[in-house]
Image 1 (cartoon, rainbow, N blue to C red):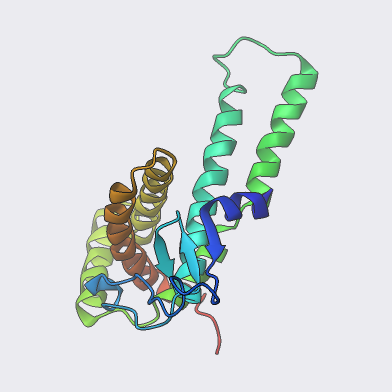
Image 2 (cartoon, helix red, strand yellow):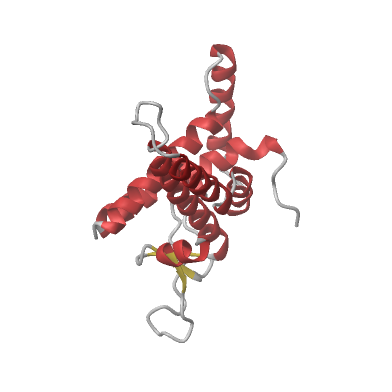
Length: 198
C-alpha cells in the first residue's frame, strides 16, 4: 500500500519532458536556507517541485500523515464508547490499525530525512531553537521538536486536504509554511544523533 499512497502524492519528473527538464527545487524559505539551487527530480501534489533530498523529506512527512489518519479512522471503531462489536470485527480492526502503523515511515525515518534535507540551518534559526529549548526545560513543557513535528503533521494534513479539493493555491501557501517548520524541526533534531553519515 505504501507505494500506491506515495504515487498519489509524489512522482518522478520526466527528464525527457521539455516542461519538466531543468526545473529548480521549490524550497525557498529563509529558515530553510533560502532558495535551493538543486535541480528538481520529483513533483508532489502535482505542482510542487523538489530536489531528491527535499522531496524525500516531503514525501515521508506526507506518508506519515496519511497513515496516521488511516489508523485513527480505524481506531474510532474500537473506542469504548462505541457499542460492542463482535470479536471477528474487533480482531480485524486491530489488525488494520497495526498494519497502518507498520507500513508507514517511522518518526526516526522522518527525522533522518529532515536532517538530510535541511543540514545547515541559518544561525538565527539555531539561536531561536536553542532559546526555545531553554524555555521549555525551565517550564517543563513539550520540547520544540515535539511541537514542530506536530505542526508538520497538521500542515501535511492541510496540504493533503487542499490537494484533494483541487485548491492548488492553498497547497502552495501551506508548502511555504511547511518549509519553515521542517527546517526548524531539523535544527531541533540535531542533538538526537540521527544526522546521516556522508
